[in-house]
Length: 148
Ligand SMILES: Cc1cc2nc3c(=O)[nH]c(=O)nc-3n(C[C@H](O)[C@H](O)[C@H](O)COP(=O)(O)O)c2cc1C
Image 1: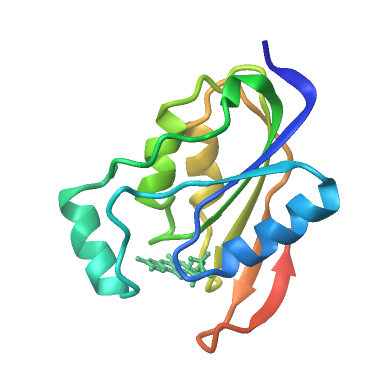
Image 2 (image 1 turned 120 degrees about the vertical axis):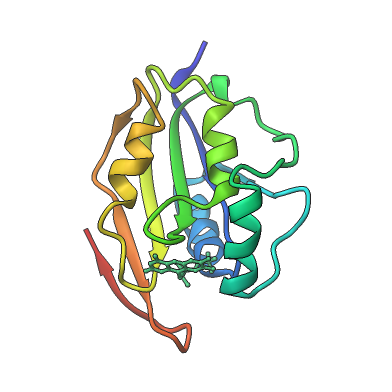
């Protein structure tokens, strides 16, 4: 049985932006934290990531150490990849029965994120969402804004 008072932060991060904020949030909330990890890590190159996604849109991920069904609230952080969800996050989302779970999403982005929230919601059937938070980074990896 999921429990509303049990909170887990789940995140994926390639270049560290999401991870940094995820750790701050988990510390502030006092919740547990789980990182989504593809079995084969991605190279830090947009072109190489895109090339791999074309042949492997849903990569295998490491088995999670937390049992998601135990948590009523998931704080979910990820980067935006081509206006969509990163492949490893899609793999994760498909492993979970989202009915009855409350999701607090946040995204690390370069500023182009118009569809990503709708795409996330479409993949979490039955979840209740709070409005997303977008962390905007510039090309020098500086956090230049937070948008709701
Ligand atoms: C393959 C790939 C595609 C990306 N596509 C987008 C995009 O569509 N819109 C956007 O704003 N940023 C895009 N980005 C930039 C990342 O979302 C941004 O750098 C984010 O802060 C990275 O978070 P991370 O450090 O947690 O991985 C893309 C990055 C990669 C690697």
